[in-house]
Length: 453
Ligand code: TRP
Figure (cartoon, rainbow, N blue to C red):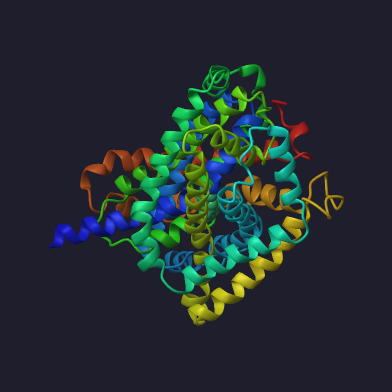
């Protein structure tokens, strides 16, 4: 009985955390960010960051969550009496809103594309036409906002009602289905005439294209994709029972997330080259390339809508994890009703998504440093808030409560003592230092004065 109970709770956690991690970040963002940053060099740097900084920060969040069984604010308050560290938890709540403000916009696009592809509106191999349709859709003042609203409502509905029931049960077969479909699309993409150049671009580093900016983008992308730096994994980790081996679960989540991101790259980038498109084209890449692949593929009429359905569900499990951080705080710490605070948070997220969506159309002239609202939110979250949050969590675990957290790391598997020491070295020194250096270089008013520049 005991062993079986453990297995099923570990499995449940891995599925939930993988559901949070795997989302638009993997399938929409990763291919276009890799494309913009020169391909192979970016991929290699990304993998190195995931294996070191990414994994160590993920483990830091997991042990905080499991040891305290609390939401991020409550967890940090419990571990340390001071006023300073719980700020990480509050910052996480703010970050959740910043991310949601544009996440639901792009997720809304995937909902719309389910219907557009099912209706045959995208059934053309003409990239200019597909690009035109995409641009005119996202710049429309009303349609994408309504889709974002629909997606936000779905997210609220899941968080209010059944995180554990419907969603967890269905993600057990929906996630494997997404994986299977991505494999099929990888094969299709790689066998297109002219795909070889795209494969080379994606896997062969061209170091002349790698700059410090590449490292910054890779770091931000790693945090975003692994759902790190704002307490999501603390929150999810707080539902794990205390006697399971967290290291293995953490490793599985990181591996699955990275596998899907890399496969999404293999699914998109060779096709981009085969169609003679520009890999640095930006956020439209997935939404323009894939409909073309479907249009020319056996069974594309079925695969197209199916793909966008699965992508929307992957986005939903991620958006749920963002909203859950906000809800967990209001419920645990302030004693609000789950339903009330979730609905209010949903309303705020929806209001924030309106300027994001409009910034791609009628408000495209309202810019700051050349970026519109959506780009500013993405920059703030991905390149600043998540890495800073991750650095703070890392320092907290490494210096404030190292002994407790080392023990927690090994709970459930005493053989992990050696690994725990390596991990401590990473959360104490390597990860915070790496993040700090990368962040400094990313600040335009600091970078020129650094000795190595
Ligand atoms: N990781 C998700 C994705 O790749 C997005 C996400 C969910 C997220 N929760 C998060 C990103 C928390 C940062 C922090 O789509």
